Length: 292
Length: 292
Image (cartoon, rainbow over all chains, first blue to last red):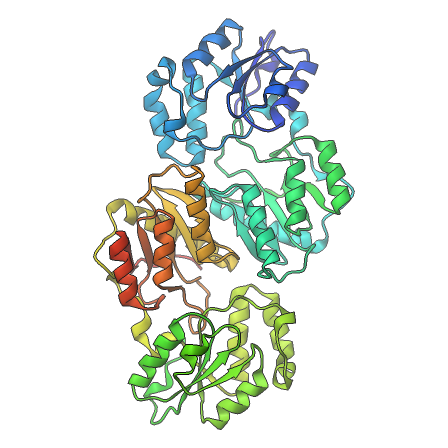
């Protein structure tokens, strides 16, 4: 973990490489409120153009390292944040430029590993270019889920037991560079996330329930998300938002737990509103994973 | 593990509680070839009526313990085998009779646990009724996958590495009473099976590939199935058959590994034919799980 540069005399503007979802803009707002200038490097095809237009920005293609590095230097940015959803791109989807070609050996190394390797590889490449990679949660700690319930509902004793079991399972599979999320209902492990992502996993639970293949009553069960033990938290913290709540409701679960201080929340007020409407709990737990 | 009763002077006819798929009939054929009479107790809604008609049989509803136990005694059966696919039934789907009602406390205990608890609970209930529960693989060892390749193709060195990683992951999650199967491709864990079953998991891998979300080339990756460490092998061994091969081909994987001697194969000749046609390896591996 690198200390935020924000404490320095003048950290200069913050370069934000923005992908999908609403979290990049929540972070940008927080940073601007702190009086720091942001420059968005919006990834074409991922970032929302309407939102991007509200901030100083450049459009870049994924992997246009040369373009990013020239423009970010020109803007006086030394710190860079990566934020937003990005499905692992295929090599064929990458739009290369000379900066990328020069970094190619590092990129190829990053591609050979799992997601964690890819992401920490990306961080290393930007560090090699002379930038300081900081976590979104370091520049905008407000986006992190805090300890305790986020809305009206609280986990029951049974939910707490399910949460503990889920965290124990996540700790076991973390070393395999897989699975930030699992669903446990009344002690049964209903789903484990791998390449499909959390939304797809929740949809699967909803489908299994509709097909009568889950015999724990609706309203029982938890989604638990936790960072993998070796995850580079500067780049890839678990994230939740209003759509997570909708998917939990469709899956017939009681609620959602994340590790307090180690998960990003988009639109917390809207999350709380939907959670209250659906009778779902959202909780930041202090339970730590035991994994290596 | 209980020793087969087949060595005794006259073990009497074998009661076979048959659910879905073709494996029950493969087992029945093997047992009949050994000169032992079989009596099928075919589960209505699960067993194939056309096939069932080829053998001495009774139709029963799931959980009609009293009917089973009366008829099985009448037929002189002391040994009982459970065989075939059965999606965990909901309590509401069970057709109760008095025998079941008497066993209800044990059934309720079984329902509170995970799948393993349910299955070993079922075994205990039949033992309490005075029957001897034997494994299908004990009466018909021919249905077990043997060590080595089952068809023409062999796993490559990379496949072997993926198989080892998959077995290590299965050993970690086994104690959570979940996941007999995982998909690993070039070191990446693509999918972990929980409540959805192997076929659904393979379909998910095929979908992710079609959506461009798997960036390991087609033809790389393995499905590995292994019994859970604490699984009651008399009741629930991993099973493969021709449709497994079709689903592996659709998922774009190189092949399939199971633990030699700890997986059941339906229609091995057809499995080999389809594997050869699709260029897929099927291998019984001696690698053991390390799990508790």
